[in-house]
Image (cartoon, one colour):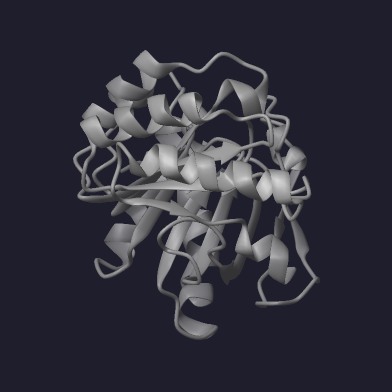
Length: 255
């Protein structure tokens, strides 16, 4: 591991996981900078910038106060900052590397994972990725204990889904723990969900398949509630580990 390796961050904070099977877990989040996608439902637009001048450190949990620290940052400097956060602010279940898109900085992401494991072998690491980076197979992701892979549906993003890429990426992962997540909009169809769920089950039958209603649209309308049930039924028909989970951190007002 090269501790002098540098990369760009957006923010670092402690909160609770609001999505997927690790929902409710108290985690330290490392949000890397940069994402080339322009998803309609993106809730972290500030993280799209690949090379911001500064990043935000929320050193105290549940506080709105932060320090601005300069980018890029080295692995050595980052671990020095993270160590007291992991040790001095209450129990932490795991660390999540998210974005932006972490694997648009693949070497830096990999180095963070290795450094955290070296610091504490008991630290559980989660990687949140869209799986669309061409360089993903060039880097070892074994440092991560849990993979959360977002399938980007055309109905949600306005961009054609990359099913072959998703298949290749899923087959490259060795993790026993993980999930495939799909953000759905009111216009998402059962047939689209069926394609995604069938591919996820074929490649990773032990992983959960998470249907996540996009935050923003009002889903309480009877017609839209019926649509969510139809999407869930379509997925369950081909993937028995399907779950419907909204963004709970948004409902609770957490970071």
